[in-house]
Length: 167
Image 1 (cartoon, rainbow, N blue to C red):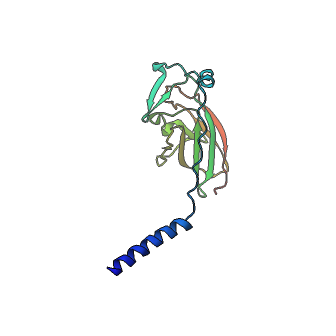
Image 2: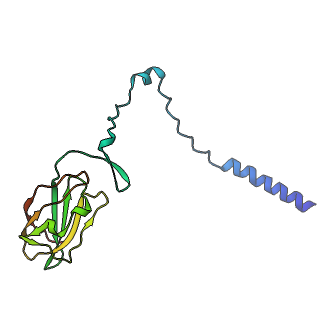
Image 3: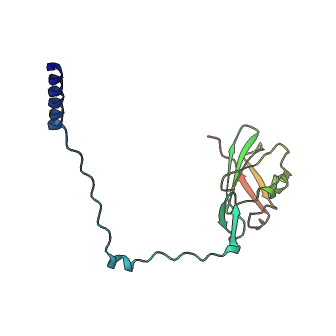
């Protein structure tokens, strides 16, 4: 019986001693008061754009809005892959239809791409990457017959591309 009494007293002593030496809990940050009704009545949300269902296209699981802009190339990046090949990345201003992008659509120095070239598209669908055989530091790239998902066809473009040293 003495042992149980001693244990209970010891437990109570440790409990109260712990309460005396413990740190107070950090105070919770106070939330600002909600705006008054008078003030919130004057704020209006921005107007939503009109929904024209005929200009919405389902593209890769998401809805995109069709714009009637001409299909153009925003940027071409070209880096040396090894001494005989380069990695080419073409960035367009719209999503590209992958079925319209074929080897016959690209010419390097007026020669069609070889059969081993494979195209890869980014998730958004506006960037194409591929590896092509190029020996020189500059070359002429011609792009034609490429179609966007909204149906716009690119005007044939011929550009002089400079190869940057790989990183």
